Length: 179
Image (cartoon, rainbow, N blue to C red; front, side, top):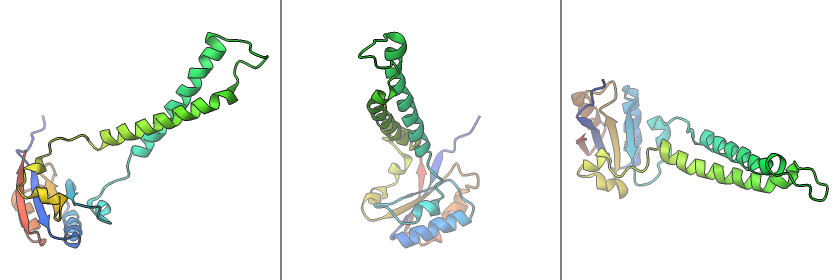
């Protein structure tokens, strides 16, 4: 049985992107892996600094497209060849060039739907509640402040050590976040 820590993590507030990226790099050098950053706009290099790995969305898209392609082809193949074959103008029953438009369209549709729903699932969305919303100053993350969170589920997490580390990284505010 995994014991859940009553604390979600520690959130540090920064005034600019340079301080945030420097803090993220320093936190990663200290050995913390379960971290997250929140910014009001995309910050170049932050994803690499935080340690985001390659996305699995392209694989989900490919599998969705493959399923759509096979489904579209078989949806036409079965009725025309096995289920209800008709001899129309002496054409072959398996006239695959005639199946291409519908097969292509179902490939694109399935790949697009797999991409959207796969991205939502892999990102854990929708998330109507997140513990960082409990931080009193977190609403500034959508305006002009930058936040770094070290999660309590990190194997190296020690509350006093994390607070000391974040306070020494030019953070303007350090807050504990409960569930």
